[in-house]
Every structure is written in structure tokens, then in C-alpha cells.
Amino acid sequence: EYIGYRLSAFVTLIRSPTKEAYYASEFRLVHFPYKFDSDRQPHSNKMGAKSIVNYVHQTQETFPELFKPYFWLLISLFTAVALKRAGGHSKVPYWMLPLSGFTYTMGYIPATPAGDFRYVYWLCLIVTASMMIWAGLKFQRTGMESREVTLEADPRVNLKKLIDSRSMG
Image 1 (cartoon, rainbow, N blue to C red):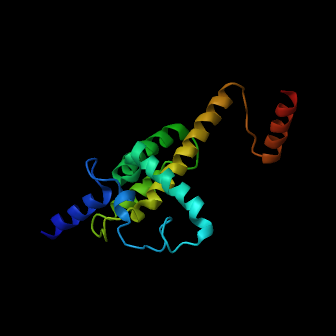
Image 2: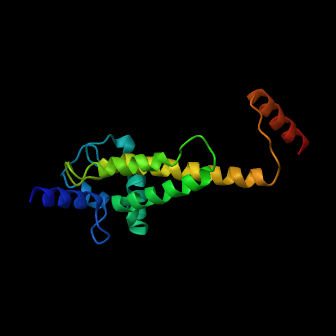
Image 3: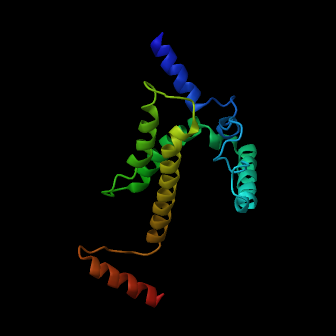
């Protein structure tokens, strides 16, 4: 019974595709003081706050999956595989970044405190950063294939080669 309860709480946390996205369902307090469009916010924040609220609501309507943790769990796995393949012979294990977000979130299986999107902020942040690293590796490799580059052990020599190649091209 307890295991069933824990799994149920975790499934509520990661949201199913049929459930409402988190942002709209998260703020149910009346006069929540930290909500962007709260009456308790200073008047100077009202215009910017309204723009942010509109942006988030439009994003939620257009891409509701962005506000569902199961989406980020799946993307973290795909990004880990993509980084593993794109890293080649790199000594830096970039693929472990999205895997850390995945394992962090999976750690909530035995102890999900509540169905709240704030528990997956790390997952969203690290997956987004990992996708940017993947894109950087892809573009770097594409750029490197177009010209031959031999890296030396001394970074000063590499810097000189880079400067020379830029000044010639």
C-alpha cells in the first residue's frame, strides 16, 4: 500500500500528458504575495509583471508540455545519449549533466513531498544547459571538419594557431 502511494505521488509530480500543465494549477492561493500580478506587488512592477504573465500563459497554451516534468525526463535521456555520441573522445563526460537531472528527479520516487513543479527546476535547467552544450559540440565539430586542426599540448601554441588562422581568413 505504501509503495503504491509513493508511486502515485511521483506520477502526480511528473504529470501525465492528459493532466493540466503545472503553471496554471500551481498558484491557487488568494492574494499570493509573490505572484507577478498580485495586488501586493509594487505599482512599478505591474507593467513588466503583466508582460511576463502573458508570456508564460501564451507559452503554456502553445507548448503545454514544457510545464510537465515527464517531458523533461524524456528529453534528459535523449540529451544524454546525444551528448554521449557528440562528445566523441572528449575527456569531459558531458552526458552526465542531463543524467544528473534525471536521477535527481527519479530520487523523488521514494519521497515525493508534493506535486509541485519547483521540484523539477534543476531538471529543466540542466537539460536546457545540456542542449546548449550539445549544440555547441555539434557546431564545433562541423566547423572543425571544414579545416584541419591539430591541437598541441601547449595551449599557447594552440592560441597562436587560432590567431594566425583568423588573421589569414
